[in-house]
Length: 253
Image (cartoon, rainbow, N blue to C red; front, side, top):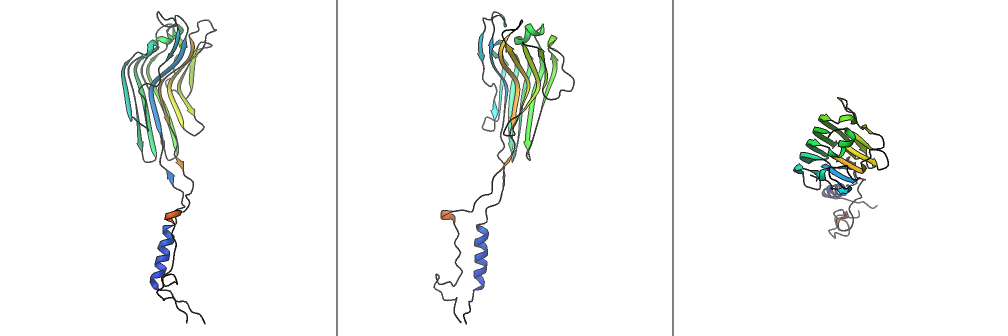
């Protein structure tokens, strides 16, 4: 009859080794990113739209940009924005946490010479701001505008729901609290988006886009289960007293 004896300490050694290799558990990816900027413009203007303007293309890039990839905050003062827009101050910030992000952008004391001909006066807005946040897989966003005078372009309701539009057909479209859901689940919120619609209509200004106070927040994601470690990290269990150890404690009886 063959009897196998196992030292008491061997079982503990096996148990620890197995637990050490059990890493295939799904974990939450706490990398959630956000970005924000105060203003941007890419437009082609017709001659005479701005005072003493011969027309042409204006491209500013994103002013006062911040993001999870840095910088965490940015600001610009007394912004002429190539004559299209003026602003006393533009700022943005992004705050990252464990599995969360919050982004904000604001523009203060704004005038819109770009829309003067369409509005019958130079439109003005005391404060424009947008914010978004992402945590626990949920993304939210909102915008605020205060002290708004857009002339004959129209009047904003006191409570502005997402994607409110006003303007002059064929000339310009103004979207307030624009909220766009991206294919990856991220939310882009732009407090004020001015879109010039082309150059063939009477009173046309040109074509292109001006965005004021824009933020983007991405959703949190989950990683796929991880495989056990391989190569140098692989654990091989040899019970104490096995022939490989040579101590003879696993004996025949």
